[in-house]
Image (cartoon, rainbow, N blue to C red):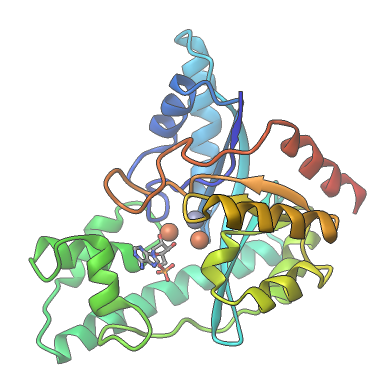
Length: 279
Ligand code: AMP
Ligand code: FE
Ligand code: FE
Ligand code: ZN
């Protein structure tokens, strides 16, 4: 048994529904599955219903760990925070997510316009269609670019057009890690630094680990090799953080993560949960 605590669904930039993900989780005999869409908890209710439905059909789905992934920025580095068990209600975190969702729409519109100025034509309607019920994001633009033949894969579309310094890039409105973490804690959630290697600055990762704003560090991730994983396990222990892990699964054929491709031991979930109750 194992815990995969980082997955995306059609409610953000993933391509599976929560029900499909949970079905995979059942086949893989995962004990826990985290659903951590970007800037939305919309998939969580669907996932809860899917768990019931799968049980009725005789499957043993993993226990759901509800979460949200927030993109923050510091020192021009992108810092992703995973919030688990947040209670949104109509509190500040719900307000923050609503604002981020609005800003995402505006950003993607600007990106598509910027690409057009460079004679790279993607149809905004098509991008919206690809986002479907999900919170829109760069992967949807990337998939449209691939469809139009501007790139041969989503990764290539990012490298050529959608990352900082490339013609379609538009920065995100600023949200800093302490503000995001405070808002998560106020909502009763716990805060985990996602895929620390992708921050791209180990000094900054250490600073964040020691800053007191985190409850956990995602040590197991498909983009971390064995050496890096061990380094993050050690770093977490040094700062008394829970070590978590997840596949960051988005879509088949995209990125390196499959459901279950990176997992944490089961007891991580209760360790994280107790952080929540301590506050
Ligand atoms: P956004 O939230 O709109 O800024 O888009 C960020 C998302 O794009 C991440 O959550 C990943 O799903 C995906 N992503 C980021 N960088 C890359 C990359 N270099 N190649 C493929 N996908 C990426
Ligand atoms: Fe994503
Ligand atoms: Fe992320
Ligand atoms: Zn993610």
